[in-house]
Length: 170
Image (cartoon, rainbow, N blue to C red; front, side):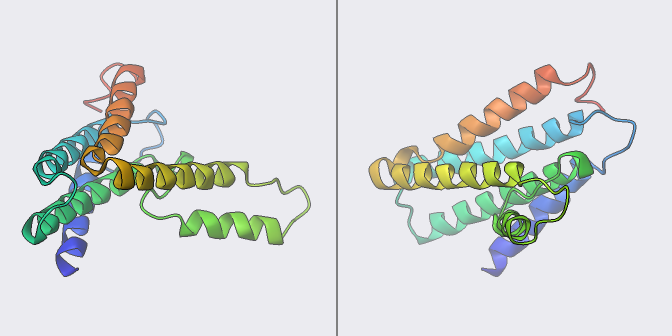
C-alpha cells in the first residue's frame, strides 16, 4: 500500500515537472499537457506488456509491479489535468468530488443556478467506463490494458495535432 502511494506521488511529481503550472497567456490545452500524457502512455504501455504474459491474472510480484505502474500513471494523469488550470481542471482519479458537487447542486438550488450537466456527464462517463471495465475483467481480462491504451493514444494524438504550432515545446 505504501509503495503504491509513493509511486502515485512520484508520478504526480514527474507530471507536475513536465506539465508545469498553467499560465494565463497559453492555450486552453498547453502542449506540455500532451507531452505529460504521452509519457503516461508509455507507462501504461509498460503496464500492458507486463499484463499480457499473466493473461490478466498476475502473480504476487507481477501484481505489485503492475500496481506501481498504474499508480505512477495515475499520478502523472492527475498532474497533467492540473496543468490545464481552472479553465478545464477536473480530477481524473476519483469521482467523489464530482458526485458531491452534483448532489450539492441538486439539494441547494439558488436563484439563477443551473443543473450540473457537466458533473452528470462526468458521472455517466465514469459509470459507463466502470461497466465496460468490469465486462473486460469478466469476459477478456487479458485485453484490459487496451482500454487506457486506446483512450490515452486518442487524447495524445488529438492534443498533438489540434494544439497550436509548437505546442509540444510550450
